[in-house]
Length: 121
Image 1 (cartoon, rainbow, N blue to C red):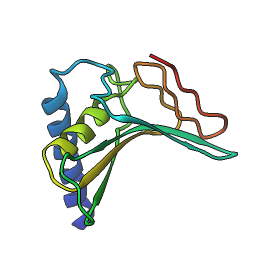
Image 2 (image 1 turned 180 degrees about the horizontal axis):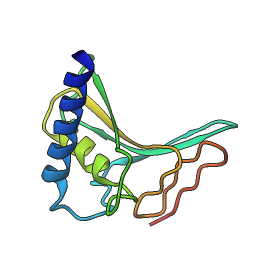
Image 3 (image 1 turned 30 degrees about the vertical axis):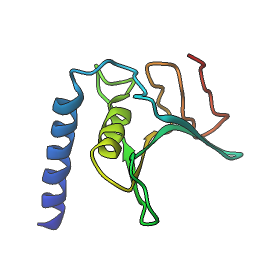
Image 4 (image 1 turned 180 degrees about the vertical axis):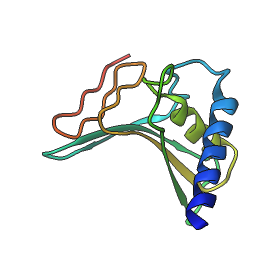
């Protein structure tokens, strides 16, 4: 029963995110700071967004995209959602991470077996 509730909740969240950000421009970083996590075996790319009001009780929010069927195979909606969470809440650092194996609309790529690829705008 618990697994079923979790799946229903996740499905609702995905629908909410798609409906909420569908009118925004594709590939927009919404003025986030590029984030790179690099190791010998993988590289992750993302954008970090912070609230305008921050104190010592900072809350970290990590946003991942889904499996991205067409037309979302080059996801960016998770960046916009992270930006919105940071903009509408106090004391938040929201990070939108690109999952390994995916490339966003601007060519940034996270890879689980090689170096990180970041395209300049």
